[in-house]
Image 1 (cartoon, helix red, strand yellow):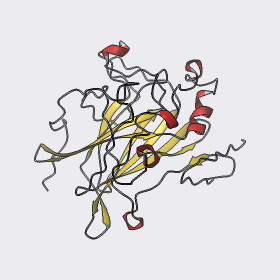
Image 2 (cartoon, helix red, strand yellow):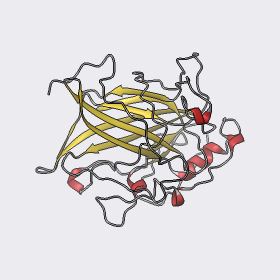
Image 3 (tube, helix red, strand yellow):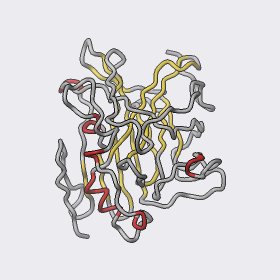
Length: 278
């Protein structure tokens, strides 16, 4: 199998797991000792629906048993907390980590604007283990007009059934890798073409990062991705600093479905979860 190497512009590490088998694109990891900051809070957007679906495989639509078509994506998220007094991080167990994103043709489930009310594909949550990790099976997301490809993520903490903390962010992909995926005629993205919005003009990606003067939010929100012919793996390390939360204001909150007023609710304990006692 031939190897395709991508030269990405910012803080990327390329390495091969085995000769000719994988393409790896790396984003910054959480290392407090190196001066990294809390993961940036960005807009929830108008398409969050608190479906309360505790499941690792979010490709399946429980309303009809169908599975979303697309390049299989194995996504691992690690959640840690930061003690700014010591500079040390520690894993955060029992955190509720929600993911939601559009399908290969740019449609979200359970959204009236997409004519998908009642569908529940590409939505779900997992509870972080003792190492603060969760894992999901999904697909490489598609795109919709006005936004570059992304995945939404929300991390909530509960104490005795009451929500005590929430962080909402988005994950982005390397653009050259996205181009390879979307132009593969064997994948369902191909008829939809390439995104009409690159990172350089995406309203969320280019929002400010309140913790780093002059920085844009998206530079610290890119997934580490490795792709083989049949699937892709991705990971992201979320750091929550309770004392100094990093936030972002969008460059243009009116376009592409990135802004808007989010639905209310979502404060209750998800079913089937044991409330942490501390």
